[in-house]
Image 1 (spheres, rainbow, N blue to C red):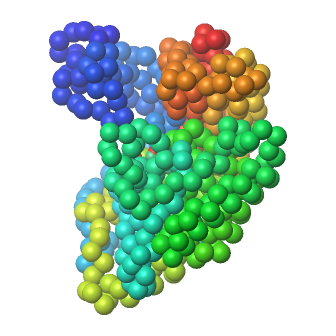
Image 2 (tube, rainbow, N blue to C red):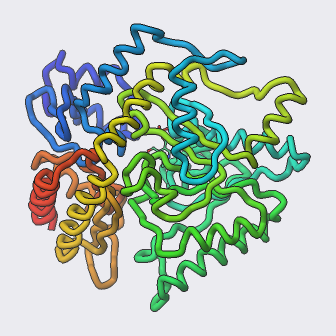
Image 3 (cartoon, rainbow, N blue to C red):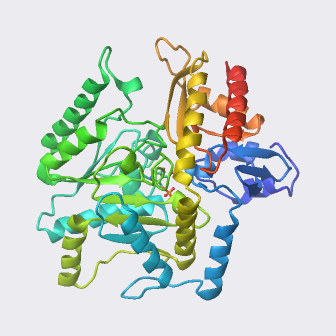
Length: 452
Ligand code: PLP
C-alpha cells in the first residue's frame, strides 16, 4: 500500500470498507485515493494533492464541489423538516414543488413524477410500473424490456439486467429472463465495412424489429436507452438513430424509457438529452445532476399512457405497492429545486453549449494523436477511444488496458478521469471555464504522450 502506516486512513479503509466496482484484492494491496475536500472543479486528497475532477465524480457533481447555495438549501430544509415521506396520501412542500417543476420542465408531455433515491432504483421502478401496467391492461405477458449492448442502467436486479455490460452480468447469473439486448449505436466501432451512417442506423432499426418479431410484439413492454450512452463509453448516436428506433417502437406499441441519469439537467447542452436528440419517451429517469449529487436523489417522469392504467389498477386492488422510504426526501428535494434555480438563473445551458464546443474542439485536435482512434462527444460529455492501430481500430484487448494506463497518467498529472476499457471519458462539472478546459486538455496530451 502506498501509505503503509498501520492506522492511516488508507489502511483503515482497506481493513473495513468494501468498495463498489473494485478489485477487492487490489484495493487491499494498493489502498484507495482518499479525497478530503472540494472546491469548484477541484478535489483535494488527504495528502494535499489537488486534482481537476474531469468526471464530476461519477458524471454527477454538475455544479462542482462547493456550491454554497445548495448547502444553504439543505441546511434550511434540515432545520424545518429533516424527514418526511410521501407514502399513503402523505406529502410535504419540497416534494410537491419539485414534482410540479419537473412535470413542467419535461420536454415531452409528462403527467406525474415519482421519487426514488438512485438511478438504479428509478430504472427498477420503471420496470415495475410497466409490469403492473401490463396486469392492469389485461396483458400480463407484455413485460419484456429491450435495452442495448453497452447501455448502462444501474445495478439493482432489474437495472443490472437492462445494463448491457459484461461486468454487470458476469458471476451474477444475470440478465434475468425477459430482459433482451440489441446492438449499440456505435457507428465507428460497429459499422460494417463501407456501411454509411444512414445504412447503419437502418440496420440497427431492422435488428430491433427482428428481435421484436422473434419474441412476439405482444410480449414487449418497453425499450430503454440513454440519449448518449455513458458508462458504455460515451457513445453519441448517429443522426436519425432515435427517430428510426422510435418508428419501430410505435409500430408495435412499445413504450420508450429515456434514461436521463447522466444526460439530464444540462449535460448535452439542453435541459435533457431527449431534447438534443428529438426523442419522444413515455418515461424519463433522472438522477445525479438533479441535486448535483449533493444529496442522493432520483425521479421518474411518466406520461398518461403509463400513469392512467396504474392509477385504475391501484384503485381496483387498493394500492400501488411500491415505493422507497427516502423517495422524495425533503432535503434532497430542496437541494434539487435549488439546483434547478441555479441552472436557470446562471444560464448554465448556454454556458455548457459554449464551453462544451470549446472542449469538443480541443479533444478533436487530440484525435490526431497516434493513440486516439476516435473522438466523440456533445455538450460537456466526451470520450477519446484509444487504439493500438489507428487503421485497423485494434483495441488493446484487455479490459482497461490502454485507457487504464492513460487515466493513471492523467491522475499523476492532477486530473481525475475515468476509462471504460479503452475509452477515456470527460464529463467535467458544468461550471468549468474555457481556461480550465485548456488545462484538462494540456494534461491529457501529456498523459497520452506518456502512454504511447
Ligand atoms: N443510468 C445511467 C445512465 C447511469 O449512468 C447510472 C450510473 O452511473 C445509473 C443509471 C445508475 O445510477 P445509480 O448509480 O445512482 O444507481
